Image 1: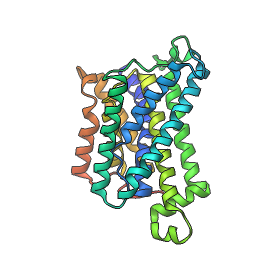
Image 2: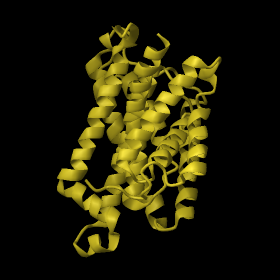
Image 3: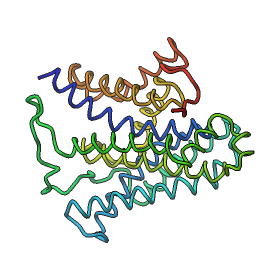
Image 4: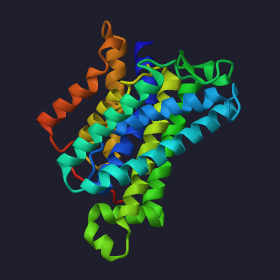
Length: 302
């Protein structure tokens, strides 16, 4: 049963982690921005999902209303991400230290706003209690909530869809062109400012989806500090896989996900220390292979 739980729950977590890390590596790979506010969009996604669902504007207590709340929350986070990029990050693009300082300040500002409005803690973010998503099915003898299966399937579907978007669409090809040579792309008529804003919006939306799926499926704590763990996860995964590598984000997410689940299940009080696992893996990778498994700064090609 121990191995089965590690495989099943490790796989589910890894799928959502891949989505979270994809948003982080996407904005870095295209614009070179190390967005330390990435975890804040994860947090905002969970909060807005709860608020929209609680207000009952789109209905309440049904799966349909929850899905609509998810969609609206993700769109709002995308808008917030795009606007904050234009107002705060865009003026300092090119100065890596300034970008990191600005994005850390953004994360702290979002945290304090959340504390002012909602307080330090927050009610659990869940799907409707009477929905089928809160029931379970046995896989390899292990009971698994349908909400967790949904989280994995939705994450992998979005991951695959974004890959198709980047490789097959005109905008996606423009993103790849900018990631490989910004000056040449500008000479070819690509509006890099708008492209960066769109990329930031997509990155923020992916983080928001991950935040909603993880908090609703794994009953993880929702509070003003919840942006720190996903930021550590994102950083660890992209460093493990290689900064800017989409393929590396997927592989790194599965390594981190399985490592976390192994520690959580097999180590006494493992649930209390799993937040250290991504950081430990990141330090180890930096010591042994600083460029990660797929050691290229940018890998947006097919």
